[in-house]
Image (tube, rainbow, N blue to C red):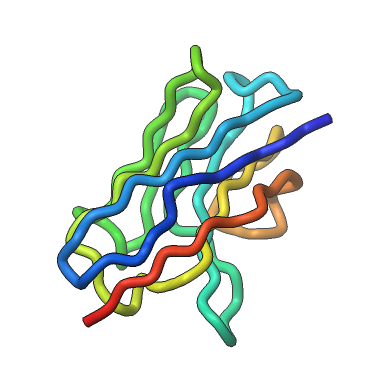
Length: 122
């Protein structure tokens, strides 16, 4: 059974940093595209960082230069380092996995974690 478990969410002040982790269980981690999504209240869940099975990484413009996605395949763990956080980064953060097409589209991902909350105060 595929399972993704996020951790690391917290409340920080603007300009601060947070590191999220996502442990993957029950699937061949090395062969999957992994992604980070976030959902703020009243908004759609949006993808912003992805890493494909070959290690190629993409970000949306709003997080470029501030967020870093990485993974440790030996530990089956996905990470998200978030720096220079802004109040608009406040959201529930989800990791996701797909064995298919790797994109920022929520519909391409079939496996999801439960989410971890990040709150950034001004």
